[in-house]
Image 1 (cartoon, one colour):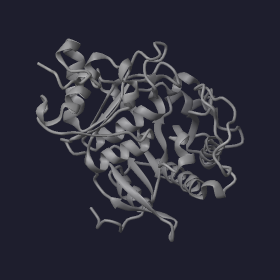
Image 2: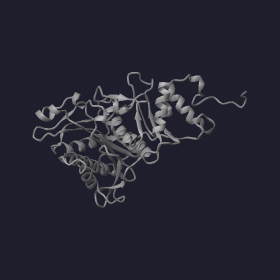
Image 3: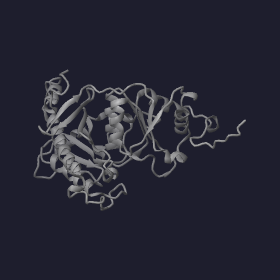
Image 4: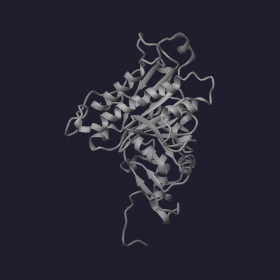
Length: 363
């Protein structure tokens, strides 16, 4: 492993390719195209209200996307950047994005390749107007053999592959510094954008998620909708040193999954956006294909664990492009505990509620 900061992303990918003498180099080129899209988005995000994508005083609303969410100017612009940077290179057979109803076909005047790209162009965009860190999430899959052989248009079914089938995945974080965190199935590496060179430079080789932690992240405003195993876990954490866990926990909630994932990679913790009863029609909030699966691949490659709460996320085969799912990821011991609670439910009365009434006149 080189000294920290000495390798660019390009050199890192070349060294990874050496492990596969028969590799064509197409995957490396595709990842570099993705990194170029992330650089362009980072520049726009950094301009904030000084740029055209975010008017002074906050973002204007736009069209409603397939998720039923209002598209912001930066959502649309980021999506367009990902498309423009990747459609022409000949590495892709098709793309899927959070912002598009159907798979995007590679134009007929461009060569088609053997990979599929799925992405969330700007995760956490609801926080952009208050200057909270946001990011882009991406996943690379192999196109089915008949797509590669025939060059036919891709269909929804071609993308419905379990997370374990991913070739590479990662995210870009647009914060005080811009970072690219990547796995190609051989551990996880973090790269920081050097604005002087315009290059992503290796600064965090071999990232590992700490096995143990005293920090968890969950949106407690949904507490009344949680399933009993989640209530049990949070109640035990909140009970602190005098509770069954025997230690104090800190709670965090940024409402930007890329930022939450990055914090956990850097210092440990567990993130919960579980299935709940708030909207029975939605078995979770986060999207499986281009949010949960790529983050899950990164976490597992860094020694962490990613789950629905009941089963490993990488084993779940999507049934629709924009399928939602419950998600728990982070330090392995905590995720395993949450899974165990789901398989061994307890009576709610056995645990104090999160916001229980308190009295000076208790027996």
